[in-house]
Amino acid sequence: MVRPYTITRGRTAPERDDLTLITVLTTAEEEADAVLARGSRAGARGLQPEHRLILDRCRRPAAVAEVAAGLDLPVSVTKILLGDLVTQGLLKARAPLSVARAAGGVDLGLLTAVREGLRRL
Image 1 (cartoon, rainbow, N blue to C red):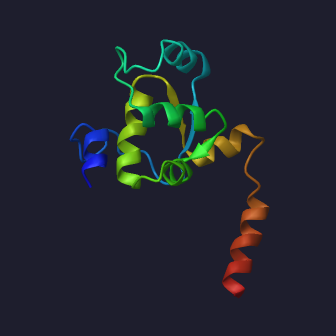
Image 2: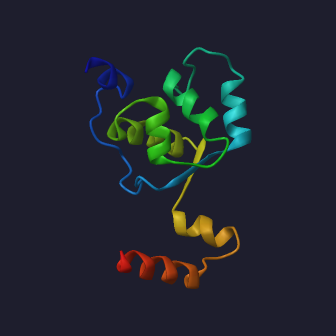
């Protein structure tokens, strides 16, 4: 498994510990477009090809688990790459509950009904 080690430049743990499997990520469009317009070379920000794939994938909101599956990389490696992009301001990370609230609120009645349905199983 040399490749993941080289992708993360030897790092084995993400700098951020707030990225969970269900954290929702979206690309900061203007900033990402400016960086991607510089060309395919790594450039000043040191973007790997995987970073670029993440930025493209997250133009529509995606969970950390979805991004990891799309890259076919371990979640731990993906979290390191995501942390890089969030730190650079190219990617926005939101807890799932804040996304639900922004979309019109959480329906507690629905959540209660789901919980009760699962208990009956």
